[in-house]
Image 1 (spheres, helix red, strand yellow):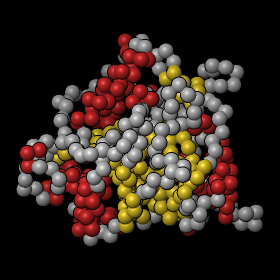
Image 2: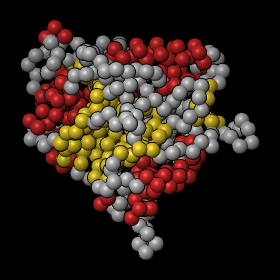
Image 3: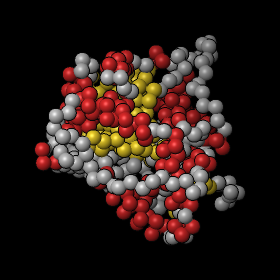
Image 4: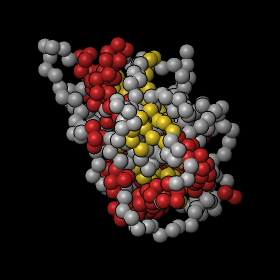
Length: 422
């Protein structure tokens, strides 16, 4: 489908449609993947690596345009420029009615940062992009003509497969999930930071040690971390408010349930919570969450939930509404949904690169803008990074969380991110 002789357009996927409508000063809808190296970054080589990486991910050159009924992506010839970090993390990338790229690559000392507007891709797509960028950079820097060149990370997909809309591919009409009563979850309170300012706190732990601890409780890493975060929040809940459940939103990578090589958004989520009665042990919380995860993370339930979300896009009446009304409806729906969750926990999983590149990389991390409190998790080799972002001035929950980890015998290396604007 062409809009001119040189530029192509494509519609936003089902998950992406909400981000242009709800992006604002309270939440930029931007997330950051970063890689920390052992040596300082060479900016000219990073620029070369970015150009080469975009050749493999041409869809990342897209800009968002506004139509009568929907937003859409349009190809652009804009060239991204690598810069030293110059503004607050997860600052706005999408500017309404302005043709701008939806990602940015910056560096700071030994770190390479890749920030992206969520409408363009999800954590899996961003992970593929950053891994390729970092390995391309390391290839240019450390492997010359006399050195055998290792292969770049494998991502065996065509440009069409990477740009594919998997929500549309796997949508099945007339499959609906049974309606559930909306839960009013406990909400965090406190003084909030200025708009655009987030509190960022990062902790690093040993993958082997934390997996061993989760195994002691006969559970998975994600359930163990969910129980820890819920318990950390509960430590500051008053007795009067205990009757409200503490509920975490847990994003789910749908590629684990439906074959897809898409670099666009293809994720869902589940809600996992616990209501305290006063005498529970940590084991009680884990047992309850284990049951919730097993019930929610079935192929049948994941498929039904995905179809419920996609059905709105296929509703003929809603499709004919003008974009301004759709935007208003999505903003109202997004605001209403905030009452059903307390915080967010996103586990991006394990990042692998070809072994020849591993000696040059210390760690990967990921965090995102949020109007609440969010914990993002990823690992590389034996380093698990736990990155909190929060709109609140207080860091009590985060410190409760890391103290609990230490109480379980897991050493934590903590670093607070600083404002690096020039």
